[in-house]
Image 1: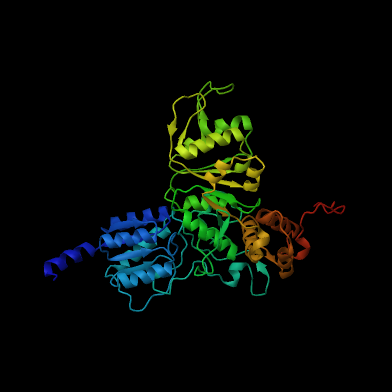
Image 2 (image 1 turned 90 degrees about the vertical axis):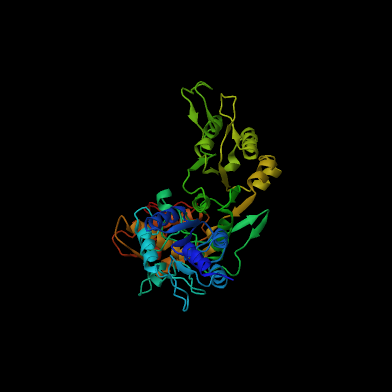
Length: 470
């Protein structure tokens, strides 16, 4: 039987204690700093499972929940909290309706104020969120529910280049080309597709219509499958192999995995195996000492060592020479590298993500790629879909590219016939080709505010007519 003293002790433990659940490391740390400054005790969790373990260890007054979780569905998580912790004040930092009857902390305004400050911080990717409401069961809705304007459609029926700002949870990119890490934590949402050991991992049927990987443009089932795979693998240090046609955003998927991982604040190093001459690739990857070879006038740290604590992205891994593949395999197995010209190995902690547009299993069969390295890389394969496989995303992708062009010039709109023409194209160059076609159409439209089907011109193998210039 509980005594009054026991009850007072428990109340003291619960009071001013909050669990903060977000896969966004930077936002989580910012909000924790603000709450600690307000004399709160904060326990940070990167996922739902970790948050539940914290609640089992010690009681809490409130839980601040990011709608997107890497391991659990937000609705299921909220239901579990309602059953197991009926007195816990649950606050969603994304838009959600209030659940009638949910207990409220006496210090809720203080918590909401802290969330608002974290979102408005110049360094936070949450800046621009319009509203914070208490979260409730069956009320947690996916971010970025789109209005017609969000798809680039104005009331007159044409596709325009503007859309409302949307909340981004983490640094990550979708299958559209953006300008770099500073834009990865941007305004779009996501979805994704993956293969594991030659079999597809499809998105579960209970996933929301728009999954919540920030930065991804489109809501097709194929993108949702990729998002589901990324959400599963991101919190771990598992090696990932991303396969897919050129122009489908493999590097952007790698950015998403890194940005959603515990390594998000550590380096993300990129090495394109096809862009560096074979003679220099080993030195670029492993580093070298001064005088190790002709031209080595000073020591240099390799990409693997530079990525210590973070992620190394090996693009076009299929182009890696066979001799270097053996050394790469050794690193993956032992976590040690040896600089050229040195005898002592160096131990580093690096997560490796590789990508290729080549069918690596076929390369293995042809003797062009080591089978042992393939299976060591393909612990968790992810397949990026071609644009032809997700045609439903074309209008939104086109509107995104048009909006981006409008930042440096006048805003324009797509005529419905122009969108129809875009949707009917085969897109062998995938999203990258779509971006180029939209930019070409924007230029051809000159000062006209409407882009028609006449300005939508795809490159073909046939020689263009005289005077067209394209």
